[in-house]
Image (cartoon, rainbow, N blue to C red; front, side, top):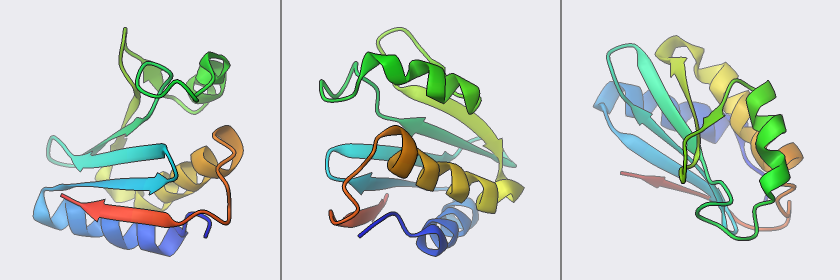
Length: 112
């Protein structure tokens, strides 16, 4: 199952309300989101530093989306909490276009 935008939006709204975090995953690819400072959501997408199957060449695609790569870290970006739909669009794009995740693989959401 491909990433489900409405599930992502619902989960983002939940984590904002609960000041919590969630992990969205398809296979070995994942994107984490957490309510950080008031009005912000911090997102991380797995990089080649944590998953050998992630191509180092993906960095330019993430940079175009406003993400950056910390030394020995994941790709990360901060969003405004009010941008839940935009964040969901970006997460779907990451799975489908950047990672090329298998659309038949299970889409998992873990609320933390």
